[in-house]
Amino acid sequence: HSFTLRPRVPRPRAACRVIVAQAGGGYKVAILGAAGGVGQPLSLLAKMSPLVSALHLYDIAADVEGVAADLSHCNTPARVSGFTGEDELAGCLSGADVVVVAAGVPRKPGMTREDDRFGANAGVVRELVAAVADHAPPGALVHVISDPVDSTVPVAAEVLKHKGAYDPRRLLGVTALDVVRANAFVAARKGLPLADVDVPVVGGHAAATILPLLSKARPKAAFTDDEVEELTARVRDAGAGGSATLSMAYAAARFLEASLRGLDGHGDVYECAYVQSQVVPELPFFACRVRLGRDGVEEVMGSELRALTDYEARALEALKPTLKASIDKGVAYVQQHQ
Ligand code: NAD
Ligand code: LMR
Image (cartoon, rainbow, N blue to C red; front, side, top):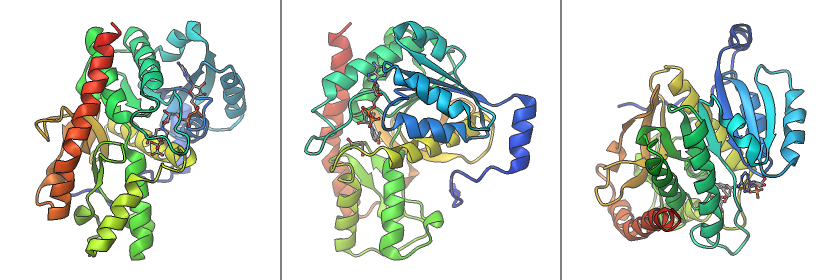
């Protein structure tokens, strides 16, 4: 397979906007946690997408009504509605094509992604995904941003299974920020044009589980051992100074746009995402390249894991126990809270 080297979010052409507006077509996107540091800029970027016709913004914080009113004044086609409080969650989810879960507690400096907020965020994801099973259409795609993604995606899967609503093709953990960061850091280090750089990032989304595959970067570049160490550490630790919001919103919007292009029947939509797979047999969830289409994840690629360098192969082995423990923790959480 050849991967597209174009920037993944092409600038919409004016003609395309007009068609969407006239046809009243496009997709309904629900953003949960829309009043937050990630949720607000993500909502703005989603409002700018020509593929979005309706934007439903939900948060427990009543501020979300103001965010929705503010965004509704932007003269792009998507109709924006705000929803707050549990009573309004069903209305927010009704008819959604894609539900983005960005609710929860962010990391403060000094915290790890994995442990410090697990209880709080696992509870939020459990509650919101249960509502998705009850109120969103069966075909809705669910994008999970809330950390720790390595565990919250298994939490979401278990909740959906208990509700008889689990389709692995439609549950995606958002690791797009790791790809965005790897692309930016590699382009800067190697003096490459940013728009051309594409680095697959596999594993999970914790300091110990993120693995950028620099040997598979496009365009091909030579890295010294020191550069590999330095760039890998930089991508892994990039959130350590406190949680990202703007770059995360950018990454989530790019990933949302890719999902919508997939739903819309565009061919060749490839992104990295943390999904259920058998690419690494002992890890039921793993981030790698997937092909996005009308049914969500239509193919888990995993071909980027072939012919790894010694460094990458060792790093992959080393991350397995940590990632497995995080997956098991998510599954156990739901079993304990049934
Ligand atoms: P934030 O605190 O600024 O916003 C979170 C929002 O969620 C708040 O508006 C809050 O009211 C809302 N919320 C909390 N519980 C809720 C519930 N039960 N229902 C609805 N809304 C609820 O945090 P943030 O900086 O926007 O980060 C959001 C999440 O995204 C965090 O878990 C953070 O760690 C995670 N994150 C993930 C990545 C990634 O790469 N996957 C990157 C950045 C942030
Ligand atoms: C990030 O990578 O910035 C996010 O996952 C937030 C965090 O806590 O690191």
